[in-house]
Every structure is written in C-alpha cells, then in structure tokens.
Length: 266
Length: 271
Image 1 (cartoon, each protein chain N blue to C red):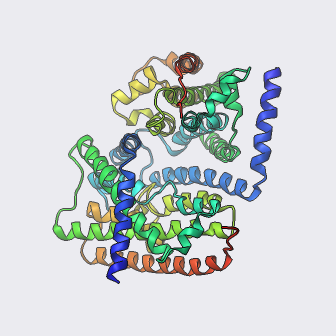
Image 2: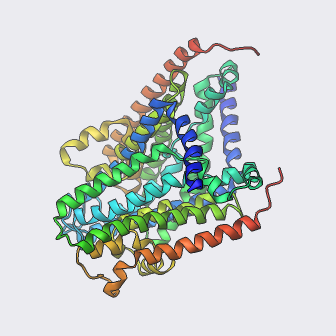
Image 3: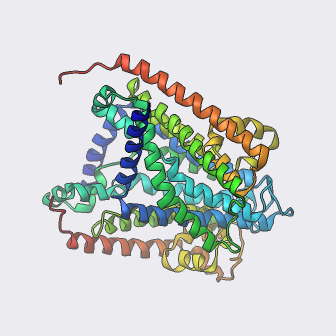
C-alpha cells in the first residue's frame, strides 16, 4: 500500500511535467488514437470488398481487434519506462536505481507514464463498444465475466512481454528493435483471426507465447463458436492461466537479468 | 556549380557511411519489417481467398502480396515512422552553425537524406524484398522490363524528395512551435493512410480515388509500389511520375521559402 502511494507520487510528478506542454500532449494523444483509427478504417475498407475473411465478419474481427488493442495500449501505458529500457542501460542510469533502497523493478516502472498512450486506449475501448453494439451477442454472466477476464489477462500478457523485452536489454542493448516483433508485432498478430496464419504461427501463439489468449480464444467463447482449428472448447477460457504463466516467466526473467547485470562501465 | 554538386555528393556519401555503423540495429529492424510483412501478406491472402473475384482494385493476389512487401521495404527509405534530425538541432540550438555554413541549408539536408535513404534501400529494402520472394508461394511480381525498372528508380528518387520535403517542413516548424512532434504524430498517421501504406489507395471507394491519387502522399508510397508490381505502366506511369515531380518541386520550394522566414526569426545568443 505504501508502495502504491509512493508510485503515485513519483508518477504524478512525471505526469505534471508532461502536462506542462498541453498542446503537445493533446496532439500526441490525438496522433496515437488517429494512427489506430486509420488501421481500423483500413480493416473496414477490406470488408467493403468481401463480406467475410476466413469466415469472420467485420464486427467479429473488430471484437478481436478491440480486445487486442485495448489490452495492449493499457499495458504499454503502464510499461512506458520499460519500452525504452535500453536507453537506461546504455546510459548507465539503471545503476542509480540499484543503489536506492527500493525494488529496482518498481523504481523503473515509476520513472515514466506516457500519458499520450491513453489516446490509444480510448480508441480501443471505442471500437470494443462499437463491435459489441453491432454483434448483438446473447449475454450471459459467464460471457460478461469472460470479457473482463480477457481484458485483464490481455493487459498482463502484454505487460509481461514488455518486461521480457526489457530483460533482453540486460544482455544486449543493440537489437532491441527485434523485441518489437513480440510487442508491436504481437498485438498486430492477434488483431486478426489466428486462422489466417500458417500452422506454426498459430501453435507459437497458443503454446509458446500465449498471444492467442488475448483476443482469439476469448472471442471464440463470446461468439459461442468452437475453434475452427479443432482445439477443445475448454481452451477458450484459459486466458488467466496463460497470463499467470507468462507473468511468472517474466518475473523470473527479470530477477535473473538484474543478477546478471554488470553496468556499461562508460 | 560543379563545386557545389561535388560538395552535396560528398555529404550524401558521408550520410550513407554513417548508417553503416548501425549494423545490429539494422538487422533487428530488418527482422521486424519481415515479420510484419508476413502478417500483412497473410491478411491479403485470406482476403483474396474470400473474394469471388480474382482481382481487387486491379491487383491479383501476387500483385497485392508484392505490394505489401514493397511498402514494408519503403518504410525506412521514406522514414515513415518519423524523422526529427533537424528538429533536434533546432531545440539544442546547433542549427545556427548549419545555417551559417556557405551552402544551402535545405540542399545540405536533402543530400544527407539521399545518403540515408540509399543505405536503407540497399540494406533494408532489398533484403526485405528477397525475404518476401522466398516466403510468398510463387514469389513476388518484379518489374519486368528495363523501362519499368527505370521508371521505378525515378519514382523512388522522387518519393524520397517528396517525403523529405514534407518531413523538412514539419521539422522547421520547430522554429515557431514547441509542438512540432505532436504535429508529426497526427500527420504521420495521415501519411500512412493517404500514402497507401496501410491499404492500397485503390481499395478505397472509386469516387475518392482520383482525389487521393493526386495528393502528394500518394507519391510517397503508392506510386512507386504500383510501378513495382506493374499496376502502373506506360503513359499512366509517366503521368504519375509527372505528378510526383510536380509535388517534389512545389514542396521543396515551400521548404526553401520557409527557411528564409525562419532565418529572420533566429537570434543567436552568446557565441
């Protein structure tokens, strides 16, 4: 609890700093929302040419898109400082963190909270609402719970990916861009139905890096649809387990990384 | 005249060589571009499988898949994710040394940008296309005649000029506002959409296509990609090149005028 108050104090200072440049803040917020809006508009454009892609209608894909987008944006928002962790390692400012009497992970997180990313969260929520309105699902308590569980699990999964990408920096700060495959690439991957990809991609996104549990499997559950690829129905509700497992890996990875860390020495 | 040409050529060469230092970063970027290329190609394959017609917007599947791989290759050539090298010097004040030099400020940066772009064409664009060629069943659709290849080259050169002029204007807006990057965030999304990066402009409703194709943004991604896949050939391609050239000249001229006004605002402290 004390940690939480401290987090708000540290992050609050950050946030007030960002709000000093009000116009910039509004513009970048709009910019990041617009970027995702045009992505969605592009998707809608494709659906003017065909009624369904791989058996999915526009609003069904929109549901996938919105679940992926919202949880990714929320995770990215909290993990802002992890996303440019290579700079902190490269410049040696991470050393300073290690000398203070508080958990290193906590301090790094509190160093930045990029408000502009809220634009993207808002856009995701907007598309989610639109999709739910258009799909006219038959709501049950299970489905409502699933929607909430999917979002929370999705945030946890993407947050863990950001942590693992930061852990990668303990070994090399060059080549950080390659980790974008799993973060930015990951969200793009699950914005579309997994059944459009080759087998190995689907297996990877289910059993190795559980990205499919962010949107694909929860959406199948919400739409009362079995997995077109033949996985058992109970797979569709395993998002929390997948998220916990990945979070565990990320937590363990971070601990090993910090122990391995030997400053840049410059 | 010859002297200054040699100077700009030297600037281009140095800019090209400067990029060579970031080998690992380029490799990582290449992997990322290739991965996204695969995702985007998969979507188009699924789209064509669902379509009753064999062509959409005048592209068959091979042309459409090639189109996505070409746009992936263009990302770094035209700096689609943003470029703030000049804005950084305006913030730090280093810009005054560049302005004081005995050559054109815009010309200097344009020459630098060609060096940077040439590096990314060779070491990011070409390998990405080869990866596309190897992973897409049946391979990509490459320009088939020397004339098409020449027009493609001209089109890419013009695309770099248009994108540079656009980025230049955004950067030098920092002389007047501290919000240049915010402006860039918004216009960046527009360039991606209206340039035909996210989806080809020919997937848009018919009635709006002529308008979109005549904007400068189409000249950054859509036109070179269309020439590459053979969607634009002959007279139509020449007309598109003329539009590109027109926008390149207009925007560069606008950039030059902006510099003249910007210089009046700069006051050098100390030194």
